[in-house]
Length: 107
Image (cartoon, rainbow, N blue to C red; front, side, top):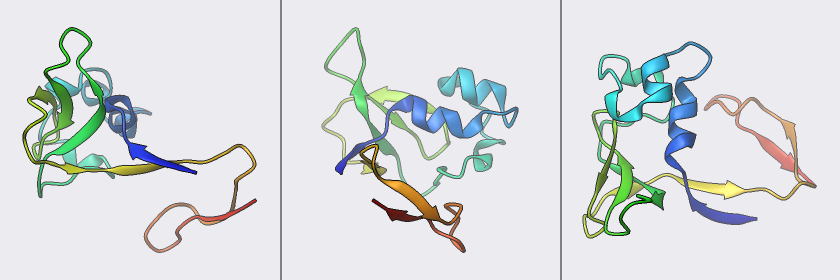
């Protein structure tokens, strides 16, 4: 198991399946009225992503407390969304990932 940070696309995927097509395809133009539709949205603080801007290593992507994806200087102190990478032999034993029914894993 490895622990890291999310990619911007991981956040955008929470708007897929018709939830909000703008937030899904163009995170920087996400309609702030629909931001609460993402289960990852938090209005507490900004959150860093793992990837840097391809045209400049001086900037890193983050999701703002407005629910939009932006880029900024990595010297800023923002929060993170830690994620885990599971090896292929780790399976979901039970649960749906919700607060009331969290995932249980097994080898």
